[in-house]
Image 1 (cartoon, rainbow, N blue to C red):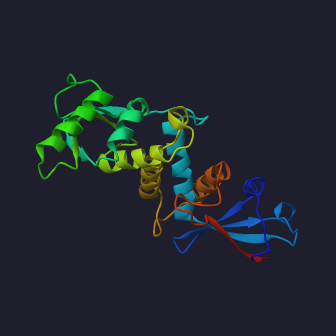
Image 2 (cartoon, rainbow, N blue to C red):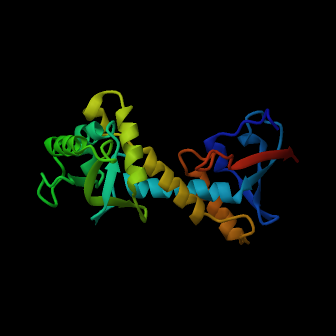
Image 3 (spheres, rainbow, N blue to C red):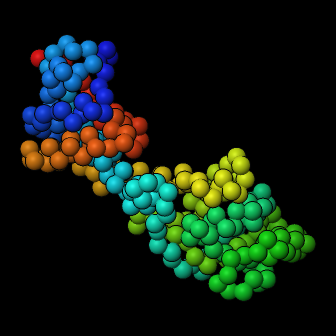
Length: 240
């Protein structure tokens, strides 16, 4: 069925027949909705992949808003001390404001910044110099006292997430002004994970109404043809 092309509008014309093998939702599509007009088409909707796409776009709206230009998250107080490599310290300094907008605030372990305030560039630089001059086994790392971290979609972000922020910000063209509007890949990964684990699974029994709900919500998605991890959400099977 490689020659069959389905469009987003055609998904609204899918007629649910029912669930098959506790894995797929079988639907039909009449010839007026099929690009090549060859007749009524049987379509198998992957129930997990389809619902995963639905859940992903719901989570994206919750975090970024309907227009995709907002940030909704909780800020959690933290007393963790994280070690950063020398090449990461300038990024912490340069993108401090962007990171603060995403809920990350921090101070240097050297005590140069008052508690509860984001670390200044001078504070981080002094911390790096003091550790380097001490000649200890940790002289290649800068210790940073975290003041707060974000919690997004129920997940409290870790140092690994912050490092992914820094890596992406370091590769962002246009400098801090462009970085201020970026969408972190770390957040995308969290949303994909949450969407996967909240979606219906293979083996879940669905009523006809459940099937209709998933297909209807899939048809309303911006990117309905693949799940959060790139797997197809539906497969044209054969012409009836």
